[in-house]
Length: 293
Image (tube, rainbow, N blue to C red):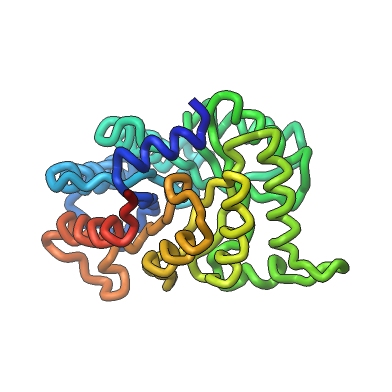
């Protein structure tokens, strides 16, 4: 099955297009969940997944951010507890929510041979259904990832990101009057013709840019991964409205919220006793905003 059809099928089964970001922050995780990182983080997500399952809450994708896990590794001391926590968390996703896309957010991109190694890491070692990469080293950097499309796997290319500094380069005006993010968008369309399943990361915090790119991508079956909803200030309701007006196939978009779901108490810095229920409430609210059908 192609990655695009996998997205369509899983969105229809879930009834929504929510991507649940898995970005564990130790300061906001209950201390009672264990002593080692590779116990605490998986136990945290397992309790949350239990609550989600009991309430029949199913997102349409998961997006573990590798950096939040491997920062806990200390390789020279033989400590790979962060990587082990990530592997356990991905296995929990597969166990609790079979056939739900797992998008490994690791933002790679290097010269051709190195990119091939990173692609093997993401798709073959972590067994991700899709990965995120950046495009700025060009075709020989990007294509080793895109070649996995023949196996039904997806690659999301950073296009117009949700972070504040994204405009520093992505909105730069080129000689032909277009912006850099528009030039990247054209290359994404070009690559997608040969490698279906090529997607784009476009943030929910830049609605003008999202509208322009969604309108362009609607004609070319480019899957969108849209971060920035929740704690970064983006509105899922606005995103859904914008995509509908662009006549974009909602089944191939995934709207991501990370700490807004897993740590909705982040601003108050107070972990509630019923934290799993609070997190599930946040997920349920986002699912309601991102329903399809």
